[in-house]
Image 1 (cartoon, rainbow, N blue to C red):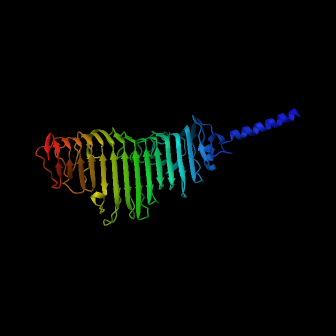
Image 2: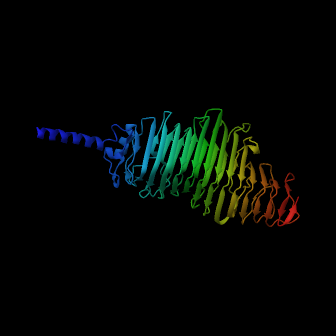
Image 3: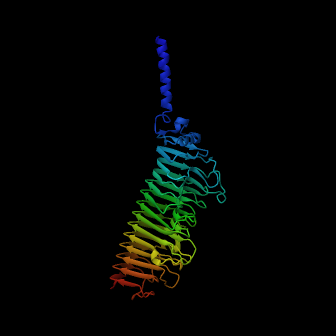
Amino acid sequence: MKSKILVVFLLCLLVVSGFVACGATIGKDYVTPESFGAKGDGKNDDSYAISKCILTGKKIRFSSGKNYLLKNPLQNPKSEQLYIDGNGAKLTISEQFKVSENGAIFYYGMPRKKILEVKNLDIVCLLGQKFPDKETRGDTYIFAVESCDEVRFDNVKFKSEKYYNNVTFLRDNGSKRLEMNDCNIVLNTLSVQGGVLWFMNRRDSICSISLKNSYFEYDTKDECVCFSVYKDYKKERCNINVEVENCEFFSKGESVSSGFILVYSNSKVAYSDINVKYKKCMFKTVGDHLRRIQAYQICPGDTDYDYGRFHTIYDYCKFDFKFVSLKESGLIGALYSKGTSMPTESISYVFNHCDFDVKNVSPLVDGKPIRRGKYEFIDCRIKSDASLFLRRNIYNSDIQVYLTNCDLISNDIELSKELFVAKDCRFKNKVKTPVSFQNPKSKMENCKINGVLYK
């Protein structure tokens, strides 16, 4: 009798042990890669186990301290929600990963009403050691999503510093809301294309993006971040609202034609109303090839069509640029109007309490005649060893500059050929007195130029 009891006890213990080992798949709302055989040792391939986790439709929770290795493509999720809790673990994308052209490590596609959430995960991308021909390979996206209701990254770290062509952290084709909080993204691949984030609205009349408390370091031949209205967007109106708070953008400036932010509308149908707000952000570069901080670009089309309104506000932001050689162009934004009928006021920048410390570059506006925009600087400090207002052509009403209570140090020999209005400002430069403006609409009120007061 005792032996039978012992056998039953051992069988029960075995069953319980099995439930414990596979408990991530039975009786819980999450699964673990270990429940499908993952080692998490950074040596063995865990692709199969993670794919099995994805196919369950449950939340995925990694084990803290583990290093999961991906060598093969993952399965696409079938459910409407994909949650990945890294739990402080590391995910390594192997140099042996089988990359397909324009492919993704994690792909989350149609239909609608899907949510992607990734948190507490450290991702290391080793792609590049086996691919020296950077010019011929297609894009590789770490995350690619199609028209989700919500995409969210919290406390995610990502690093890709190999010479691999066209790595992009996130490509988002039309989600309704995107959030990135407390993330650290480093992408220095010197690739032909790619960036940290490419957001292309394809469906929603209203969508929003929020980036907070994050660090972005990159060096690619494209923009770090891109927000756009996709060319196939069919609705008459499109509103995109972007908030970037307490973030730092850093570029080594080694890759030609790189830039921080690109905002553009590529639809010939939609009236685009795009609003971008930066608060307590830092933009920094130490190289010679950074192209721009932010640019608005409008698609070519009917010159009688008003494409919309593009408005940017910088509050308490810092701009630190130390170029080695002299750059004959400004950095703060540009509109490539290409013949559209948009009025100058449709493109506007407002800088509140911002600090500019730049070397060998004009910090304010570029001088190409096709560019338009209204620039307002309020309570700003601007220091440059070049010119503040660089203009290659005779003044034109396509650029308007307004300064209020600003301190400006530069090597200007003239204030501006643009429409220029200054109030309560202090200038230190090479302008000869008395000051004269080439634009008859320009004026100063209670300003000092090299110690001389102009009322």
